[in-house]
Amino acid sequence: MALAIFDLDNTLLGTDSDNAWGEFVVAHNIVDAQTYGALNTKFFNDYLDGKLDVTDYLDFCLEPLGRHSREQLEQWHTQFMQEKIEPFVLPKALELIARHEQAGDTTMIITATNRFVAGPIGRRYGIDIMLASECEEIDGRYTGRSCDIPCFREGKVTRLERWLEETGNDLAGAWFYSDSRNDLPLLSMVDNPVAVDPDDVLRAHAEQHGWSIISLRD
Image (cartoon, rainbow, N blue to C red; front, side, top):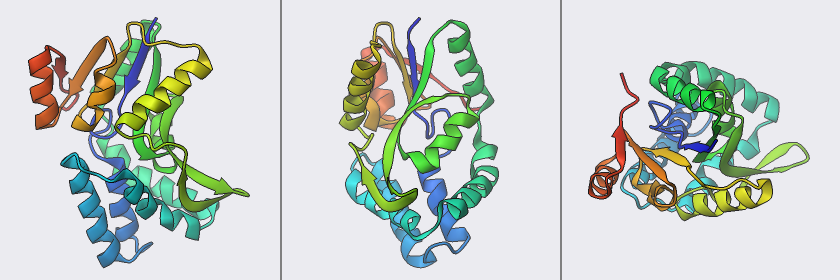
């Protein structure tokens, strides 16, 4: 038995859910389309280029949550799942998760995406354990601000190490699957790093270090 850790966006999922949520709120006029849409694209490109300021991004993407009730947000998220997520659920990813579970491994998702967006997606994949960027809540409402350490780059390592300490688990024989150069800090820690449909930087690093490279796309 070992940990089988999965990145979410463009790894288990054939799209980036953070960016997709931004597109969704623009398309449905939940935010100012021109201003928000341009910034959403800029932040996404920064992420792809490995230069995202995650604090600025969380301030940007979480702010609209503070302006709406939980009931309304959950209704929108249900629609978002149908429109923007379900078409990108990867059957090969579901099969990979099932193989690890059949082997007795503990499956978990670790993602920079905020928990509001990512939580229901993790449940769609049948994974209950998730480390994500956290959304501050007061009296049952989102404040529009983040809390805790952003679950991004070295922050993923910090959050995982804390979870291991709290739960008594360890990384012996652990797997980590990711598509992104941003996950090199955590990939370098596990016994079984796997590059999944990787970006160019991760692919080159994986080839240089003899890591497995796989595709979950059809």
